[in-house]
Image (cartoon, rainbow, N blue to C red; front, side, top):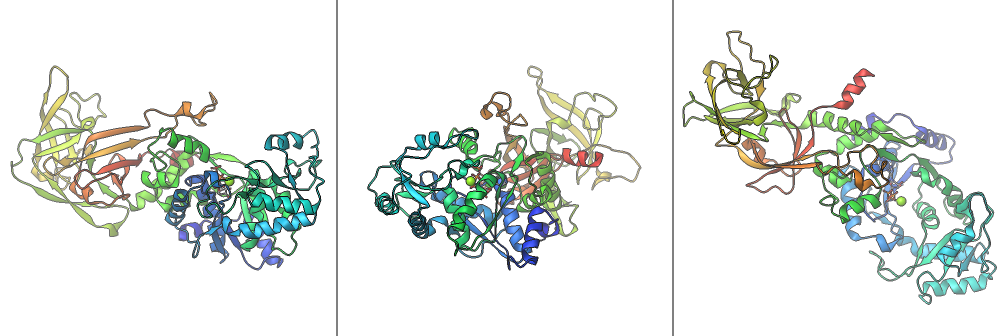
Length: 561
Ligand code: ATP
Ligand code: MG
């Protein structure tokens, strides 16, 4: 995976790792990507994936894929499956089986009992609401629960009964006994276990107590021998607790937690809760709707793993939160597609052209280069005949000005890979104003796209032979949100959904070579943009998604410096 390797400039995390390795504190690098299987992965997760797997690779270490499956109420097998697919699609290998936090529940339970015996944890009868009220605020200290002084023996018995299902959901919790006056609210006797009866995707109903994230996460890291536990900035205030728990179990391996800023991108939302709402309320067609920032949505939109990895490499990692311009993401996509996408012709809004002086039954097959950026890519055959489709936009009844180089009465244009044609007439439905067909003559001497007489023909149109064109559906996507920060104006991100973010064209015609492409294949429709084959395609009716237009606003910004 040379693209992640070539751009691995140093950053503060690499500095930490370098110093841990050179001081001998660590002998190797083991990282992990720990998604909770409660939704699909998005581009923000890709940043974490590229970082964790990328570090493991460049230090010849290892990166685990570990499901943080400690909250069965929201977790499902569907998400476990999709996450594995997405990480693999992005090009990363977790070396064997995925790991599951739930496989460690037994150990965690035993360690919790160790804390109880050491008078470092207690069973509390306060409700969740009471615990919150007792905890105090940043300016007022917390208040001790009346149950805080239970004996270790009593706590052990109660904890076992919690596990055995003798209390209803929410009736009791196990809490760490730390410090209710701590300036860090996370240290004010945090909950370690709660009672929840829910069917766990892997454990079924074996457990009715579930560990809280702060208690579980460090133990998961420790069991797996993680050396550097990389997480996002909101966990910075949890690090003292991460360390406290592991310090109470001194024989356990103690990883180092490092925080970095999460990825934000404008014109999109990136919290699983919001993405879930878009799906559940049917604002999009599903998690893989091509407008979603989910990995599966981006794949369906036509993003390549290479372009996403390139993007993640370019944004780097920092300690300070910031928002990345979506134009950069699209720039990375265009750069990659420009190198690999086959060039094809497709007419999205067709207008019939009849070439009056071209023999009725004749068909010529022209060779068209597959990709001028890639000489190895060869050519394909394009059929040409007397009746063709061109883009409605490529004809006007009257040329609006001297800079108009498309077709109009008396004007000549080049048909890409074929001939010059000159407009001699057109037919119009006088009642609707609709142009019905355009009549042209062609110049046989211009075969292949040029003549010897020095004649200048500036405009080039794409076209599709009428009798060979394959009728297709084309879905034109733009950003799902019309505001840079969805919800900034009204407080509700749904208010900024762009109702026109999907336009479906049902009369498009594409050259025959396009009908042979496999699902997800990326192509460039000449002059129109990059498109990919949607999995909704059938043999008779291909469906194409517009991945991105050709115009690169980021490249302009970069040039201006
Ligand atoms: P969300 O905020 O979308 O619900 P999450 O953090 O709850 O995400 P997890 O499944 O816990 O989702 O995330 C797995 C890993 O991905 C975590 O280590 C998390 O820090 C990281 N991650 C999630 N969102 C981002 C982001 N926007 N940028 C970078 N890393 C992220
Ligand atoms: Mg999380």
